[in-house]
Image (cartoon, rainbow, N blue to C red):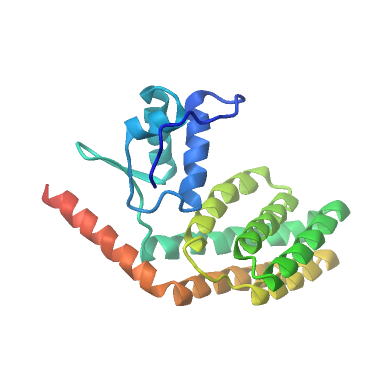
Length: 240
């Protein structure tokens, strides 16, 4: 990412470092800043039009959130996701989302069902128009709403961070699962509509596992490359 010196218009509801953190996090998730790229404080300071203090705080928060590796005397770098991290992430996602679907089947409201149906319709349309970014965004909305419908606020907060990481991984895939994914969403929707908690949980578990397998099969070379980069970086760090 090449940054030009240009004051960035940030929203004013949060402190400066939180605003910078949110923007950088979004850029990392959607790979506007690539894995392995160095975050240079002065460049970011010029870009956002703020002092280096808020930039430094934002980077430390990104490190805590798991987006950035900070190497002593070398600086901060966006993490390179590898096979092990992908396997762990999608495993956690499968467990949490299956339970969310079970709870949602018992607690979902008519309004939430209507919202889910609208998301599915838009997702199918986006897929038909080969709108990969749109399909991915709507996919995130679908899963987020199911978690909200569970009625468990702690689970919903946990899944918010997990879903951000899922989008980060899936953003690297040129083609998303598409039509098959939205067919599965429709089946989950039907189970939720009928209040069939066991079926909803089983379908969500299979759906999220299918997404992980699709990620591996369509992104195998890149995952392997990322794992190699991650391993090389670790070896280099240990040899210093």
